[in-house]
Image (cartoon, rainbow, N blue to C red):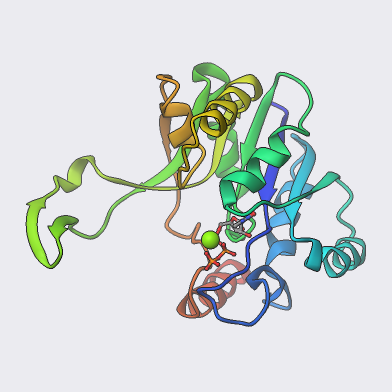
Length: 227
Ligand code: CTP
Ligand code: MG
């Protein structure tokens, strides 16, 4: 099943504290975002990539795309103030009525095996996300006073990619813009349309590189997959 993919890559990587976009950091000898792009470049069912970028990273990223023979980037769109705005800029550029994935460029360990069931589920149901069962116990608190312990068996840590029929994602972003709603993922915008979003079980390896410790985990995952 063919699909296109939006990769938001226009963040600043503030929590990583590297003094530049964390996606340009090198892990396993190549930059983070090139790892991510390679997965889609090498997947025959991916027909096009839309990259949301920071104008200040554009030149460096273009050079790296060429150097690593990434050919499927259809368009590079400017990022926005928040991740949601970056994704929306790309959604407006995506053509057609098929399936589009939204995947954080900061999750370089997405494997092709997970893409197949996700795309299939989105095709059937309209919207699907990868998620893993939570390992920690989660509590709600008012300041430092616990008010509730949530039932872990029904809690999921949601990842990307998230997959949608293109018109569904477009409508969700349009509504969010009109209503000035800011969500932390794309599925939450679709949920606000009153549409169903289905979970497909992801992988604990599919981490998002956020803080410096994540670079150690990344090196370990690379080492494991090479062996
Ligand atoms: N992103 C984006 N546009 C933004 C903010 C984030 O395209 N305005 C992208 C990031 O580049 C990343 C993904 O969205 O690939 C997930 O965001 P996050 O992990 O929060 O990355 P950053 O925003 O770069 O990090 P931080 O929040 O620590 O600054
Ligand atoms: Mg951020």
